[in-house]
Image (cartoon, rainbow, N blue to C red; front, side, top):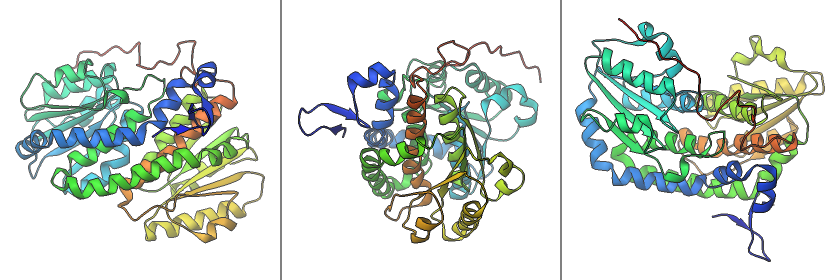
Length: 398
């Protein structure tokens, strides 16, 4: 569902028509952010269609001593960072999130030759040198290795490699999730959703209920809350800090990267855990800083959230504090400069990330536009690229 004007039936994305988006160099980014709820439904259908294939793969490969590594580079790495704690508890297995950039440069620190391993590779293009390099490294150096590739590009190198062996499995995301914009948005959310559904494949129908909830809420956020985000952008902060705990800390890494990428580094953007922020990183706050707090719906974790929210609100200076809360919290109206309430229905916390992430993606988009930067191509000088270039993968001799 796209937002339409009442009169002419012209498609509007965040208050802009297609002609305006083209003029601003924002067509792909705006479209790819807005299409996500629709693609989440398509992702579910893909997993449902591949249900038996996934069950067969997991039944053969999951053992009591199986090690699962979630890997990718950049945004693809943050898929794993967001969900690895949840999956470790869900599966009662050793689940780690390790970037391909670390696996490739320091393989001797991570490869365990005699431990049954599933390497889960996330990739928009599937052509990043480190992603292909990690796939090959584990294939060559782990005796009992299987690879699960979750990618948006059927023509990518990873998709091709994962189709060769019966011990591997490739799950392709919806075609439109292969974002054409510089920044990954729908590719990130679809790969994250696919992971949750795959590793809980026996409860697809139950998880469909949670997914339907976040799809409906996601459409509402994209249609109605973008003006709230524009208000935050209009504060003209030169520094932005994202704060969150647990799975929201993992998501904060991705939200910080979105703003850094889309503003071409002109707005310094960092992230930290709620309790970690006091231990030095809080030094970043000055009068031009906006702190964006992703408030946990876990009642215990929320106690720590509220302590820091009150503290930052009471600190001297002209910094600004915004809090995005999944659940209604009346106190937040009085302890921050901007309170954005999702007022969401009760779902497992891991599914709330699909609603939280939309705010961060829109924030990066509007910041980019305010600075006169094309979100679709924020670095036209080519020094930073959609698919990383210039990486040499050196031969590893164990």
